[in-house]
Length: 321
Image 1 (cartoon, helix red, strand yellow):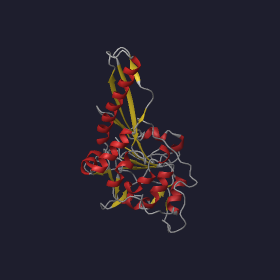
Image 2 (cartoon, one colour):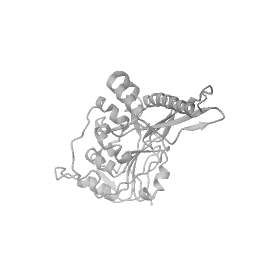
Image 3 (cartoon, one colour):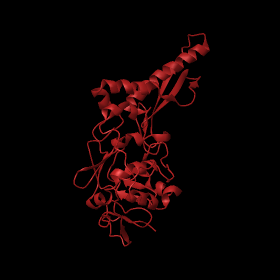
């Protein structure tokens, strides 16, 4: 049985059914399911763990949402940026082992340079790429360079005896204290959200739904490090940069990007009852921010305090182009 999320019937309620939404290009018919209003409770009670008794789940497969360029690849699903570099073996060096080692070192330098160029293209938010931060803040440039130099090598160097070259692939995290987000954190505002307690409404959502999915694929939503969500009046509802400390925990990004919604729904962890909200409008110069409709705004007002718990449980996903 499929869940039809009606933009007329969402208002401050969850629909008690299973499945997916109707196409964003169609008028959604009013759902004929029973609607149970869930009022948000006082959040001043004792704080709970980020991911309480709910078992964290992860879906995004590395490479599912990725952007490639001549310099490297930004893998939003895998939470990484990768680049390769090639070094040429000096055939005039009679010490073959030394020649290969020098070529490998040259390949690492080239890979670092390519990785730095690839990182510059990462969208931080709807207005800014990493390159802008590196241009405006010398300290950010230095820190990003440091992260790039410390990027991990993927597997051993590959030696091609026919071409006389050595190839090296490097990888760094997007989110995480030792990744890109840790390097640019000083340039971000609103770091360190005030700790919140889990409201009854957030707890009810986690018990009832396997995930909250914003489907922005039809609206042209682009992936970014810190997307924003606005309500129907244009007021900022959520700035995910305020939750930066929750991202990248345990080697995973708590904000998962997907490109195939059907593939998500076919996974046992999410097939039961994900709440899928069609994104009908995006905003921002880089097309990374979401604008909710009136009914969705009313229904998801609790998300500002509930988002850390959804992230901790691996239940906050965005479907992009």
